[in-house]
Length: 243
Image 1 (cartoon, one colour):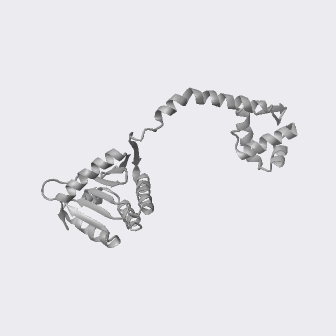
Image 2: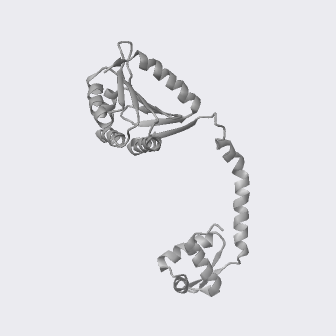
Image 3: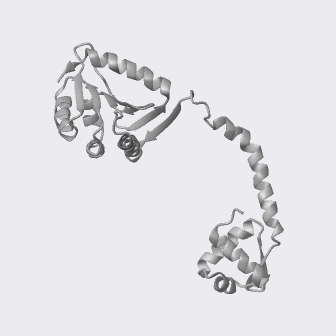
């Protein structure tokens, strides 16, 4: 009925005692007095307990159980009021992309965890990666780069990656290919470079990492968008230079 377990214990004790002090209510409910004080305040705010003062002494009395019905009716009225807004937010259209933004190191780590948890449960799913590793090394904290290697080492999925032709990318590939022999990498020829982004594509999900001092990642879940970017990746892959 919307009460926590401890709130229910205190309310039932008040019903049984009729009028009782905090000490009596604490003994009856089996809870500590400081906890009971807080719970009585919560129940009083919900109209389920009344405070009775006799001089310096304070006792508490349970209000009629029918008040619980009033509380539920108020919540139902509020729900009916905001329901149209909630339904507008609810994404039931499979063609509508789901977009999430992760900011800061911890949230980016969680993004990596989500990615590699998915791959762990889909061992044949291919991971596609393209971006600027040099910018990642320069701007991401070492802990983020090391964490990526750590979670990647637990995955043996096939990986295809396209990177810039620089020392950092070649060093990275030597390390990553030892971790996962199914990791292939090709580098861009002289017709452009990736800059300040790293991108990962798997299943129906595209993740765009912003490789700047303020780290964040945008996750887009959409079958159509993923298929389009997978097509672009394959076109670039065939034009890349093998290592």
